[in-house]
Length: 259
Image 1 (spheres, rainbow, N blue to C red):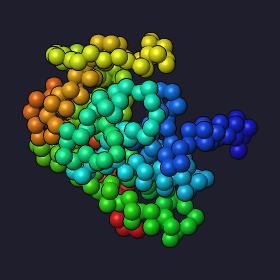
Image 2: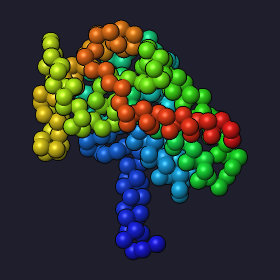
Image 3: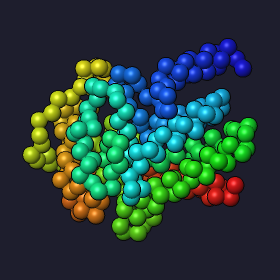
């Protein structure tokens, strides 16, 4: 390994070590102080190369926030303060499917089957790795079924996202046009905290943030009921990136099922 590669590896592992919180890893102590879904998926892949225990804990802890209908939320709120939209803002208790642990009410790209397969393949303890797969497989399967039923009432085989944040590419230019078509109505007052932690020129505009929160308000008013939301929400996208990941994840599930 070259010196630069070794230095990069050392720095990456150091960041993971600093951000580890017993069973999960936070993306950032200041800006993102909770557990994020697809972050945990990618992080578990990294851990799988040198710390199988953490890799497996990272994955399993994320599914502690899975809803009864299979939806895997993009955030589990685990004690960090100073983040908005907070757990109280999301009001996920409005849904009959939400768990006791506080979560957001939207999902993120389904990278978890791919991550689980990497964890298995990088393990030196085959028995332990298979035990992990037996625990995680039914949870991921329930998530995929949710995406291909509740998020695809047309039965097209392509899942729909209700919010730019569900894409994982939150502030991408690809959302400028669909967001611009949204007419914001009756939005409660709120206070951003992200622009207090990083420069505002690195964050979404206030106008875009209004639209982000308006979409959440629509979901809340419909008690996070996908059937009702589908009829009224002004942001319904069959995102190529999200569904490409879902396709690859389904292929990974086929491989896992054969192990």
